[in-house]
Image (cartoon, rainbow, N blue to C red):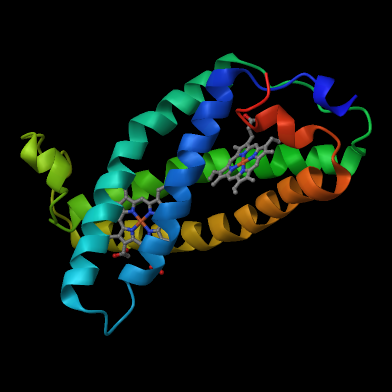
Length: 181
Ligand code: HEM
Ligand code: HEM
């Protein structure tokens, strides 16, 4: 029975969906805020949202990575062909790597550029990184390249998840959805 498949533990599910919702806010905010001709107040608001939500995500992602390293995911059902298992392992590995690269490169880009991160500045937490144009430029290039890779991998990830949920209905979706025990 599909719903009887072993699922992810509740913390893995909650961490997945909290990070997923935040990333799905971060991506459009990032893409829109860099557009030319945007009204200044809109651009400023999006930048503040993007920088501060992204910074808040760093400890959450750290917890998620540590949790993943200390808890094996449940085995996939036998019905999943080998190439799909490999594709899932590869894409999940890439998503975890990008979840680290994205906020860290963004943080370095902003701090090495000498810009504020309002939340940390309010708390009196220092910049931690000295001003450096070459470092800021390198971090910016990495942030942009990793963003497009993330969008591509996520398109495959969400497509595969929806296919399991709506077409195959093989229980893979319920392994991650918080509603099912
Ligand atoms: C609408 C958006 C999303 C849907 C529908 C979705 C769905 C799922 C599902 C069903 C699984 C479980 C796969 C399995 O049982 O093997 C999963 C795993 C995973 N998802 Fe998502 N996801 C979404 C967004 C995201 C985002 C934005 C990220 C990160 C940027 C992400 C990262 C991951 C990772 C890393 C795993 C593997 C978990 C592990 O094995 O530790 N997902 N996702
Ligand atoms: C999971 C976390 C993050 C995601 C998914 C993300 C995503 C994006 C995306 C899609 C863009 C637009 C790319 C482009 O066309 O240039 C962008 C740009 C940008 N992001 Fe992020 N970002 C994240 C975290 C952060 C953090 C933590 C900061 C800073 C504290 C940050 C600062 C910036 C800046 C300043 C830009 C403008 C481009 C640049 O000047 O390099 N991001 N981000």
